[in-house]
Image (cartoon, rainbow, N blue to C red; front, top):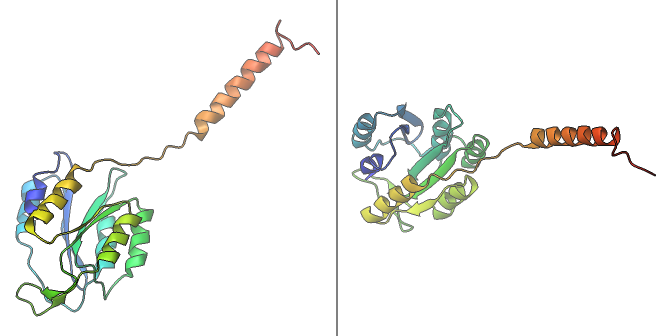
Length: 194
């Protein structure tokens, strides 16, 4: 499903791939080569390591970006973090760098074993929702392949970006022009009569 997501992205966009467990690993830096992205995604495999570093994943993802263009991360996890950077610190880091984090929860509240590994994965939906809300992203829970597909489609279609514009210099120039215009009127036939 993640590989199919690549086909929904408009041409000219750049995608990177990062995996994480006890640390985060950049599998592929930002690129416009969608075939390479699909290849890397198809070859991701579970790694048995000591812990899950969600905070590291957020910080490393934010560091992949090097422009002021729209910056969005899709974080696919159960939401449990027990090693690495504190997730609250990572959320603040993403906010400071204008990175939107969309979260997709991949577990259940009851929990279950992950793939062939003997690991119990339970969902922390509250944490995933908080990450998305604080970074102005969207949060999804993938309870089926169709839910996951729908989540990817909605994320791919959300291209709206809030831009801030500093117009104080425009107001300053306008005030100077109006003062100059008033000075001209006062020193011509339109003088103020007391």
